[in-house]
Image 1: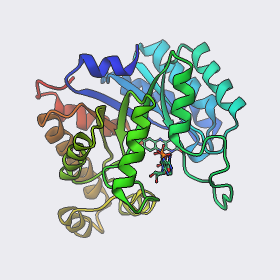
Image 2: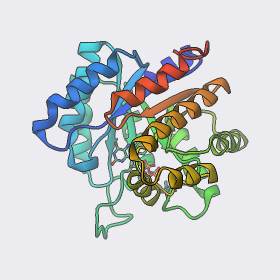
Image 3: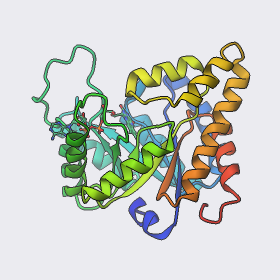
Length: 290
Ligand code: FAD
């Protein structure tokens, strides 16, 4: 089923994200993770691409398992900045052969020392979305950034690029993580004002440790509200309490978003089923969800 149709049918779409293991030997671990996640019956599970060195094969293998074994819709991420046209076309063929028709089309981050900006076959996600949509049979998602993409100094311009992605056929959007729901609501208003009419799912990642937050902020530029900073300081020497609080905070974020009628909540599970379990548990009492 196309994920775009799930968004049309459900008031709030709940989805999980997993990443392929970094080493082939760890493949059993991810299968165990998916087994646990599948019990929570999300509307779809997405599988990341490339990050940490995994290629399209592990993404497709895992997405295919999610769909075949658990009959849960799978969303295969696909990045394009380092890909040739043949590589992208071949990956799209493999997706079809595996009955996978939902793709999250991304540019991807530039590799270290990348010196070919503007000269790649696909310089931006919009180029990849166009290519995939030309094939006809795929439903395509794209990334959106409530605080603007880290490389873009002009938030208004970032919004114009987002509009291009929707204009060439993106069927739904999933946001980068954020720690303050007000940022999401303001972003949604900006989309409405800019005439960007597309389903928007809110990406939620719990804080599990101080190091993880530092890394995430550095990578994506997400801001931290004062109450989060205070709790990071409070639990500085108590990692277990910090993790417990971080998951609870993410669950509360999700609960509030769903209560406010968002189109979807996308949980970055970090391959830890207890995160998804805690958040879904919190949403169980809300009639809008699941
Ligand atoms: P784009 O939409 O192409 O935007 C990239 C930058 O270029 C932005 O600054 C934008 O303002 C600018 N831009 C866009 N279009 C134009 C244009 N026409 N002209 C000039 N400038 C333009 N990374 C992975 O490696 N693997 C994953 O699986 C993965 N999954 C992700 C899932 C989600 C939900 C999100 C939010 C991110 C994910 N990422 C993943 C990270 C993503 O690859 C990076 O954020 C990347 O830097 C940008 O990708 P994009 O598709 O948003 O790029």
